[in-house]
Amino acid sequence: MASKSFLFKREPLWLENRSGTRHTLPDNVQSWTYEPGSLTQRLRDYYGDAVGVKILFQQWNTPFLSERRLLKLHENKYSLIREVLLHANGKPLILARTVIPSKTIKVAKSNLAHLGNRPLGEVIFSYPKLERIEMDVTLIDQPTWTQPAIAEGHIDRPISGRRTVYAIAHRQMLVSEFFLPGVLEVF
Image (tube, rainbow, N blue to C red; front, side, top):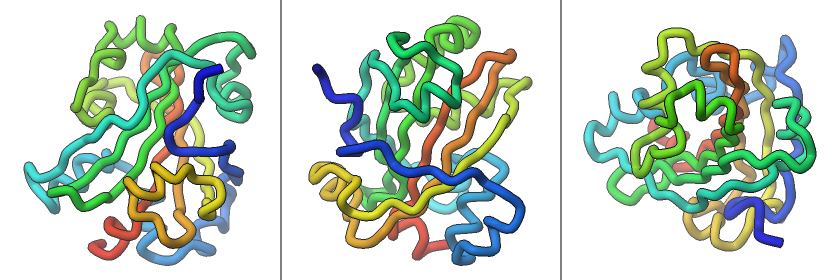
């Protein structure tokens, strides 16, 4: 069976974002985790046109169990899974994993299936009816990451992340973002 992820050996452990969670996170992690706008736009505001996307993994596959549960997908239902590295002049900033069910792609007029090197945030934040449904947080230790992910992200410590269920015209998708040391140093 083909791999479900370039980034992970196993599914990360996610915690529901409850009231009070925010205050357990370091300030720089809070700043990124609770960013209300597009992370891509925030990076562009700082780095300008130096922000780039490297596609690490993109294929139709079955999402991880918790992802399927969150999106209420059947076990054998394929979704488009896309994992990327956001960087500025080669400096790794954010690793991201997106799970886009086929019904969401249809409602988005296929724009989400043909992103190429465009950041997802650039596309989804242009939809006037984009909704945030819920968010979870995580702190991922090194044994969860694959060796190629560790190399791409220059991962040398536990990495914080968030995953957000977004909806476009009531069709959901899941976006997970992991804040690498390079992005936390700057902000």
